[in-house]
Length: 464
Image (tube, rainbow, N blue to C red; front, side):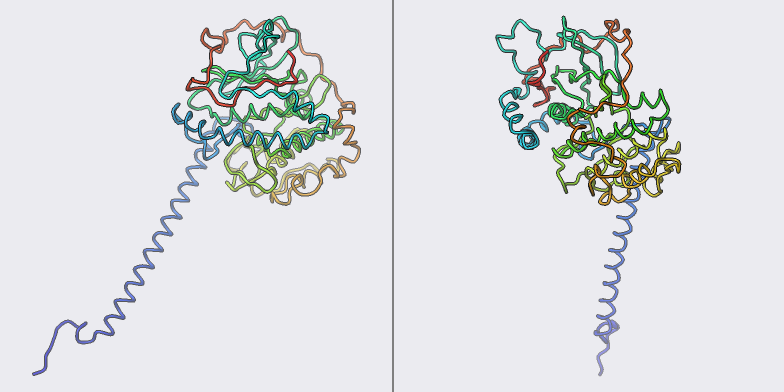
């Protein structure tokens, strides 16, 4: 009798096995496809959330002028313990970066300047409120104590603090003091960066000079030179546009300042008219280093959403890695505003503004000087690798042919415009209440949990 089994797989095993293998392969392929689809959906959702977050930050505001800082590593608020632990881990790295930058600064100065600088450099005690005043100077006011200053008018205000016109008591030498309140939202790294950049800014006459930085448990203070000429933003509000001679001169001095920053590995990331100040003679000083990024040399790249939307380069908005080319883009937008009174990408709709920056050509008026139009086209190049400033010698551009760069860097050229004398009202003592002048505000030691290590310094060239 012939044996019979109802399992077809037993009667004809080979076809069954083939069928089972094909089915398993298809299942695996379906699983992979599903994973890819889920990943794509997650990425799309994440991008939508990022876009929504950015739009929420900008709604009901002038979308071209809102300052943004969302570096990925700094995006979430930190507790005091987390901040302290992060500071402790970064101390060695900060010291190494400081030594590297000092070496670079020394290389860029003449030998005699280097020797003098090395002899006079004063390094502060890490974590302290500042260096102790030598006994020979004990009768003088401590410039690293907020109670040593008399405060006058408010020069500016932001989300986390304000800038005050001030002077050491019994002194007629005016300074600008930036007071920043320490909160869960303030970023220690940004404060430390601003202090460190101010500390080296004195090596370039085209950067706002930092005299000192110190702190209390609740506030951080930066003491800077007082620039009575106001900002380019003020000039544009007053005059609408600047004549071609001023555009050429001011932008040439900005080039000197930017090239110095980039030469020591610093990207500013917030170049715009309001951050370009004028001294009493009319010389340019780049200011506000709160969004600066350090240790970006040559081909190094960084990431993170930082800057003011109307001045952001396409690569930032596209969340790509970027370098110093973003400063040259913002520089181009700033020059266009100086010459025309308008942004080359301005749009009141946030999405359309971002699309214009990322995909559209800049709107440059035909009536502009031909050399300037060509310069703007090169600066507002979408491809960062082809952008003038990182590619080619911007000083050799035909727009700057009348500039004697050696004389300019030595400040031997007469500015085409001298700012008017500030109003006497600015120098009247401040009558309002200043939160940073509380009774406990002048106490800060390295043992305090809210003290930022390495923040404080006093410039050896500042003699208050």
